[in-house]
Length: 460
Image (cartoon, rainbow, N blue to C red; front, side):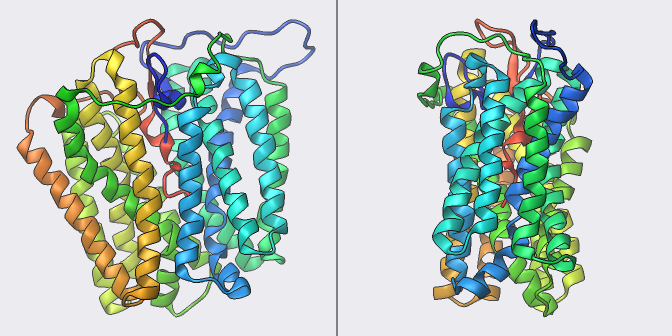
């Protein structure tokens, strides 16, 4: 997830153009070879995909870690939560650094750190090492997605918008299922997946080194590290109405990213690593489809569909838990995934068009802070309930009911605010219709914080 700054705001990390790209990458003197613009575009999109794939890679391995190190479901959710917090910290501080020092320096540093993190994962022999790797991974991801998001739009506004919408959830989905397949069918499961990713990040680092710089550096890098968030009084009502939807979708992502493998393993009576990654794959994959299909739909319709799908999908998963059916669980997960993608997109777009150009960064910062708190904290609470409450299945039911209540509250909020902010907002990836005051118009791509995701997006 990411957002935009106006003067300097923490949300400027991940944006897309609304008035057209500022400039295209120009050939830089003194360099014999540099990537063509088309190759540079694909390279940067692949960085988001594989960063998010790397963040999802530990999901199928949690059962192995628990068996070897003997930690509880609470610990699993903490491992998930610290990543989400680290991504948020990076977005709020260094997320806009590439505007000041250029895209290439930020990406080179972030990829180098991410590659080193893969070594940490591959050599981790204890829980503290795993936690340290997750924190560092989160910081690197938060730094990279802002630079990539802006860099894609530098090269091509329209394609960059679509790539920023699809790449994070694609990475989360493919990382979960890809890691599961590697763990299930190839040797040395705790190491191989990270070594494969390490090789990919090394290739990407070389590619970025050969890439032209697409941004013009400007002063103010140190000032840009200071996070500031705010919500104008006139927008507090719409923001409050969007909060239940944001917490609902990211709480669901948090559960699938941390306890999803344990739950589907319990329903199937299997510890298959492929099954462990399958639930997150289905959730994120359905979310990606929803983002693409609904990217130009009216904001009210998108949010309404999202919350309705979330209610229905989570209800079906509750039925699956009751009858112990993996097939029904995955079907419910697919429906809930549509709600995940559409709900987040709709919640952002029902608020942001109401903000003046100079207010958007602060408003979006608040929305993303709420989203990342929803991604990090509820999963930890669920882990506590599993250990000290009624166990995995009972805690799943309680958690699901809470998500459904939040979705219902969001629908009620829509019904109570039927007018002005629920018109057709800008499409996904182009959240604002006006340029930012004092600089070329750009706005954050809502999906990239998944984070970023989550995207991002349930990206553990």
